[in-house]
Amino acid sequence: MRDDTIFLAVWKQLSLDIVGWANRPPVRPFGRAALDRAQAPYAGGRRPGPPGGPVASQHDEKQDHVDRFAAVERELRKAAPHLLLDVVTVALREQYGVRDVELRLADYGMTTLQVVSEAPLAEPVHIHGSPQGRAFGAQEPYVESRATQGLVTAHLPVTVRGDRLGVLTVTAPEASCDRAGLAEMQQLCEALGHEILVAERDTDLYLLARRATRLTLAAEMQWQLLPGRSVARPEFSLGAHLEPAYAIFGDNFDWSVSAHHLTLTVTNGMGKGMEAALLTNLVVNALRNARRAGLDLPGQASLADQAVYAQHRGALHASVLLLRFDLASGEVEAVDAGSPRMWRLRGGDVTAVDFDAQLPLGMFEETEYVAEHFRVEPGDRLLIGSDGVYDSASTAGERYGERALARSLSAHRFLPSGQVPLAVLRDLRDYRGPAPLDDDALVVCLDWFGRQSSAGDVSA
Image (spheres, one colour):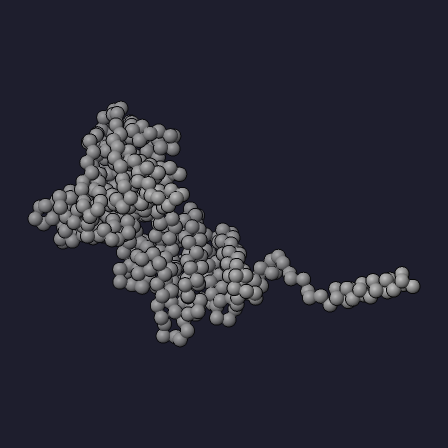
């Protein structure tokens, strides 16, 4: 009798389990269909928060954002080069309820922001004095209210490793443009910027958008040589600019950053037009070849010197300043082979940094070069100018490098390094008066922060 009772109890429990299994809720789907449903738009442009307590909710929201961002990154990588903006537009509409999207890139002269389109219909906007320019200059989102209730216009900088490319403008519900929403959209802008740089290998769309007018052939060659217009790392930030941007000849800058060193070169090729551009191309590529072969700084200068002399037999030469920064210690190795010069702003004082003059590259056969050394400290700002800057004269005949350049560097000490070169060149134009530049003008600005140790201390 006892065994029968036990059997009936077990059978009753199994029956309840079977009934419960039949009435269970459906299993949550997964795969592509689930991803599509997860990315569907919600009212107001933002997703509803998940159930659960505050801690679980914050964790789930963060994971949800990571998943959506990864999905957009995958779509960007798969998209055709000319369709990158379309991918971002779809993501912004689905995730944030965005109405309108517009991408503008800075032109070569860094004066206007040009719309990216196969057939541009919108007029360029000036960087100075425009809402888009405000976001571009400050490198942070700028939000404008609109007449339509509940909508705002947000301008978001598009920047890659410190290189300022342009601005993405969106019209979206006000609720989507809170601090968290803007931070998430800013991440999409960074992903877009990375893909634009990759896409430029396969399409002219983004290069054409940067042109306010046609480049000369020499300028086309020079711009294709440049690594970018600015770069930033925890140890430093660097910006550079060339004028006249659309007709540059022989001036050039180049940099390379490794785990331990920053190598920076500033070149001034002799001559005008194509002659200067071809010479500078030879010098820059010879220096890159030597650097990538593992030669030290004097060795790089010597190899480039031999390449130029072998080609021109002393008829043409190039002036170069080569610098190699130790990112951990701030020790700098320098080879001064010509005309580019350097100034240092430290603690409010501007001083010229002088080196022993050595022969320009290619002037004589098998010239030997010697490195010099100095040290940068956290808070230092270095400015390098070509002879088209410091030798440029005012209407009274005084050269810009004698006093005016130091005043300009000091006056713009609160600007970030990426904006200093253009500001100094604007001061140069004012200094010269109505006379146009009679030579290439190049300015490079480097801010040194130093490397932080694991304890938070800063090494020089």
